[in-house]
Length: 107
Image 1: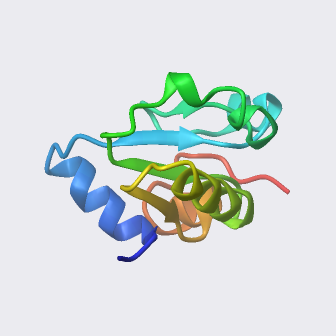
Image 2: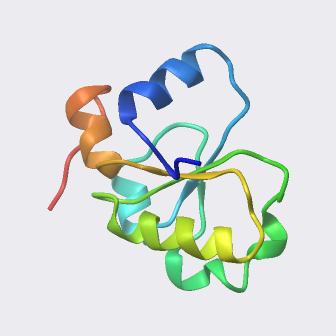
């Protein structure tokens, strides 16, 4: 099973109306600057104590700034028994560059 998804594939799936749970694992200051509409913020540091907010049956797409923290989150969720989790390759930065330039980029 692949635990990653490209920004282009995510856009295609969202456009098709697929039911996905977008989990943003960045910090609140980052989320306030740029986000994918419909996403839910649970920072990586709070993820372990927030598992009850997630549905183990849902398809969860984790993302962060460039894909490193969300890769950690994806691995953690798989270890916790979440079977349908993917990391967004390149994070919100790739989303801004390749899919939606209206989403601000930041350092």
